[in-house]
Amino acid sequence: MNILIIGSGGREHSLGLALKKSKNCDSVFFAPGNTGTAKLGQNLAISETDFSALIKAVKRHSIELTLVGPEGPLVNGIVDHFESHNLTIMGPNKIAAQLEGSKAWAKDKMKSYNIPTAAYETFTEFNDAKSYIESRNVYPIVIKADGLAAGKGVTVATSYDIALNALTECFLDQKFSQAGLQVVIEDFLVGEEASILAFTDGETIIAMPPAQDHKAVFDADKGPNTGGMGAYCPAPIATPEIQEQVLEKVLKPLINGFKKDGILYKGIVYAGLMIAPSGQASVVEFNARFGDPETEVILPKLKTDLIDIFLAVINGTLHHLKIEWDNTTVVGVIMASGGYPGDFEKEKEISGIEAAEEIKNVSVIHAGTKEKNNRIVTNGGRVLCVLGQGNTIQDAIKIAYTGVDKISFKNQHYRTDIGKKAI
Ligand code: AMP
Ligand code: GLY
Figure 1 (spheres, protein in one colour):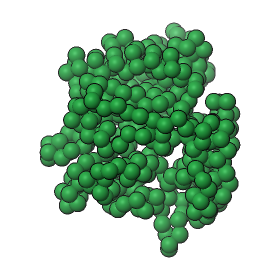
Figure 2 (figure 1 turned 90 degrees about the horizontal axis):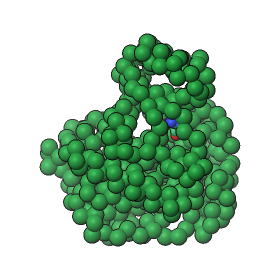
Figure 3 (figure 1 turned 120 degrees about the vertical axis):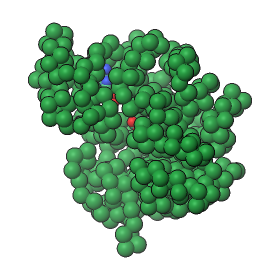
């Protein structure tokens, strides 16, 4: 089977690596891909937003299955487009992808399906939102632009001034364009975060082992939030009891609620959770896709054929499948460009990738990389995700950082404490 993976990050490289292990995988294509994906298959110079060029490429290369990495194409209805051409694609359609595309829509669904989440109000007018924070007068309070904002639309406001500034950016400065003209204001949740991703065919939902991302740019969770500076799986904070709670109180109610509402949700559900000291898990957000860097640390543990899983999702036969995972722990450390998540320079030469890959149980996942004059250079904020796989979290951390130590590029930076929370 020929497969197309849409996207260009570490998540897509990891998906490609997992699919290549499948007995049914012939060729993998990436649009647009990166240097890592070019080694696995063929990169197509097509943007993830150019649906008609993607459809043409699928026909030209006899691609039988398309996977979508990032949220943008899903929220913009790529699944509906492909299906209208009778092409097989895995992911939620445009209506279902609002789970990630509109925070207000997602919160309303959670409320109606009784899924634990922070109390909230939705606003479409600056003055109403301002009056609300003044009347609530509790901090921190969380202000969220409704639509997609590349991970930058959420402010955890620790004071009135910060909250007012967030509202000003959304409504008056229109920093997030349309995406910020509706705002969700919600209560601050205390606890530790974890991500539980699941496969669903719209009837059956099967969770993957829990992972934990490290969103802040610096050690000890200091500094601004990023797309994620590293992750590990499994995350012991999500105990078997909490996993069961999330399945029964979050994932199943979501899919059953959608069914009742006539919404067919197929693909990946990503539940971003806050686990309170009491052990109560609440949903911070849902995503309609694989997480990045969670995917990089989850998929190496998968024992079941990934194509079989994706086809079961698409064909509605997930209840027949037993999905198995190994007992290892995987730690992934992101090596980022200096300045990220702010401005950064590109095209810094990267050395040491091969030396890192020679180390047992180290793999190097490419995110923001490209080739220039036969050299691998940086091409994004998050450049590489260096994985260590071990029998314990301690082993996995040690292995991952042994890999990191071999690699260098100018102005690189990375966190030195990925996985420590699990110890
Ligand atoms: P989101 O894009 O909704 O996941 O929000 C980004 C980050 O903001 C989350 O990963 C949390 O760290 C933080 N956050 C969002 N909502 C809340 C909340 N209600 N309480 C505490 N932290 C939150
Ligand atoms: N790791 C966070 C995300 O994928 O949204």
